[in-house]
Image (cartoon, rainbow over all chains, first blue to last red; front, side, top):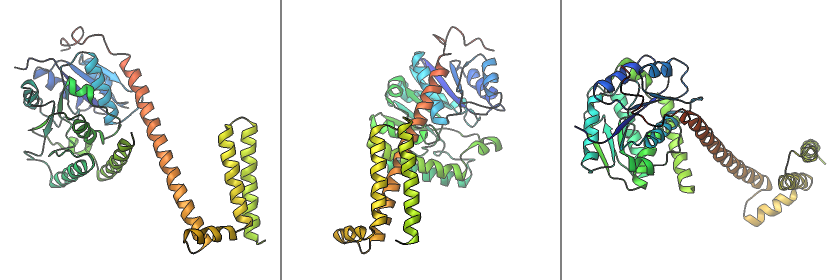
Length: 229
Length: 119
């Protein structure tokens, strides 16, 4: 079993139909230290999360995935996490996969572990696979870190790694920024295959073509900004 | 003078009046005031003596004065857009920090004291 103190961060924006199931699934698997960041949802996401007896932090304005992850990670660090796991609130991840993410950190083989949905992409539509591949190439070209799934929401960091990563972006581009920060801080990275539970719901919550293009644009601008810092 | 010059000069005068008014109302700092006064006086000079641009254009190896104006304005516009983009990004980041600070105010001292028995 995992010896370290693990805190799971769940960024959530308008996920009232899945949030309770996600929280209960994590608890059932033994992950009881949970922080749900309600990113200014207009539905009952935050209220439902509070009722489940987890820590629920509320953004009074919607800031996007990057903003929510940043809040969750700083909260986890303040609460003395040794390992921080990020877990999407749309129900696409399997809590059973977390143990596999923690093992490389326990064994000190890696400080940043990405749960890759592409090492075993069964059930992922081809259009998604292609879009993911483009995102991987862009991430590699801009930030120099290759992953098979740069947009995965299932990740684990050692607390030392999390403390060194500076997350500046607010939106979906944060996923690539995390890879960029791992490269910049020379953190040991590893990928492990994870399952992806694609339902009609989780598919509809992913990035549309338009949002994908916006993310791409923001990534280029992020790259420009990072070089001027 | 051509009609176009009159129109442009009228516009510049209105812009200058606006700058001076803002400065008098103390809504503009002195460096900004001097910058905009210089910009508009410079623009007025170019409108009154358009041949100046041809002279400078020839010095730079650009064919026509009008082309020089277009190149220069494009360059300045892009630069200003980039500056605005940076300012916006900074503002976004500040809003996030504010929202984060407010969210973290509700963070309990320790996790174990309140969770784990939620079910």
